[in-house]
Image (cartoon, rainbow, N blue to C red; front, side, top):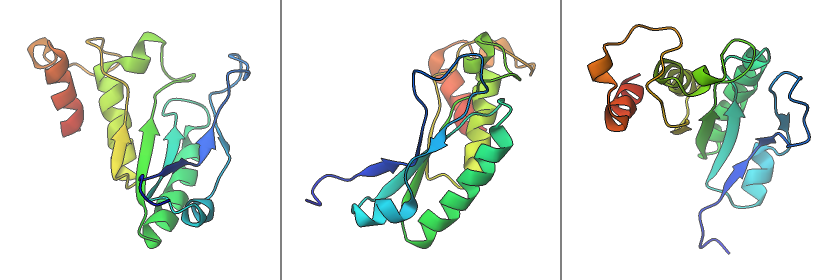
Length: 143
């Protein structure tokens, strides 16, 4: 026990969730559970672009504050999806960059996003700045 650093994921969805419903996740664990289990970090997913995104961000903000008050690190999975984003836009470099930015604003120590594609959902970016995957990742990191 205690040899492997543990991250407790505090919310979850499931594959039986109807695709017609708003993208959301249920809170399935707590910061106190993470402490009881000897975890070093907690994780939480947000869906920027979904109808539930503001609720998820408020939940994340509270969890981040509580976790950090106990010295735990926080991993935020920031996966754009939902009514406000096209399917192709879920991995668009501009959307992924903004999703990473939102997770940073919430105080994440580690941010997990999907690899960005060349597709642009909203912003105008000079294409030579996003031509390769490494340049797109640099762009996301700067966000």
